[in-house]
Length: 114
Image 1 (spheres, rainbow, N blue to C red):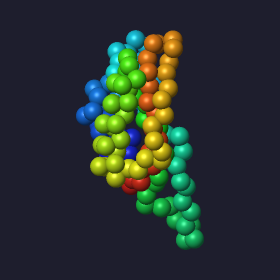
Image 2 (cartoon, rainbow, N blue to C red; image 1 turned 135 degrees about the vertical axis):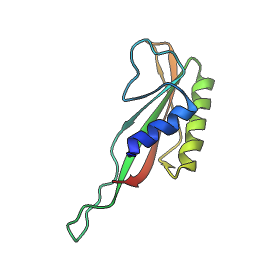
Image 3 (tube, one colour; image 1 turned 60 degrees about the vertical axis):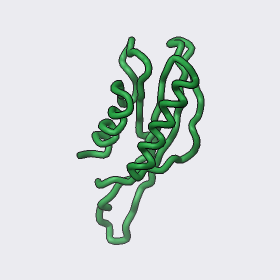
């Protein structure tokens, strides 16, 4: 199973509405979105492809209230840490005025099989 598929499965256990990149129009909150925003590259002196890859994943929790968005992100953080991912920093509060939603964003570094 790919890193992305495993992430999707793990996040769906926390919230049934999980989408890569962005949620479809009219998605009911709460929901999660995720996207890869980089990662560490590897170069070996042997000029061979590494057996692992690193991804920096940004997880976004969206809800009707600040408290609900933060609570959802704390669940995500616990699950990510338990799975072996590491937070890059603490959650960041955001909002989407057009959708009247509050958000919490957090980045994680993940090592997985290539």
